[in-house]
Amino acid sequence: MDEWQTQVEKAHDALLDTKPEEAVRIVDPIIAAFDAQNTDNTKDYFCAEGPVQTLLLAGQGAANKRNTIIMHGALCNALFIKGFALIDLNRSAEAGAYLERAAAMAPLEAHYANEYAEWHKSRRNWQKSFDLFEKARDAAAYAPEKYRPEFEARSLRGMGFTKIELGDLDLAEKYFRDSLKLVPKHQGALQELDYIKTLRKK
Image (cartoon, rainbow, N blue to C red; front, side, top):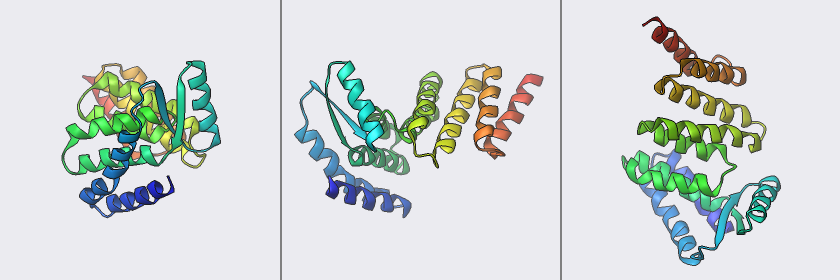
């Protein structure tokens, strides 16, 4: 797992250097190794960051009477990085499967759920996108404190955007205003509130 983490960090650096092909090349062996070794469908595999997430996911598995394996977050990072890299490579249709796996295997990671919600938003799957943003908002409670406001605010902005598309302007406005309580003066949220005013005048 330590080796996986080292490789994931290299892949992340490759993404930052706008080298998505290299990022995919680095994470592919990690994903392939996991898939080859873990073929038992009676087990649920989850990624956790820290003891709190580990305990919560283990408790969820016990409650569901499932054999639950809690793994280091490196695998889910690898899945997420591949999804993100595929988007950069203009292979968005392929990216969804990897973003979905990352979000499903790390259900307490708001960042993954937000990105998977964005993927559905880009494909105009408004209700699915809303549901994932809502899940990300709830998961933000388990994020490190310094990241929590931005993760939650991003989820709320996504919920607001999808509610505009679904025709519920009142809820859309509420979500954008709630997001501004967490990240004040966010230009995207302010612009969407102005857009809602314009729509109401029509």
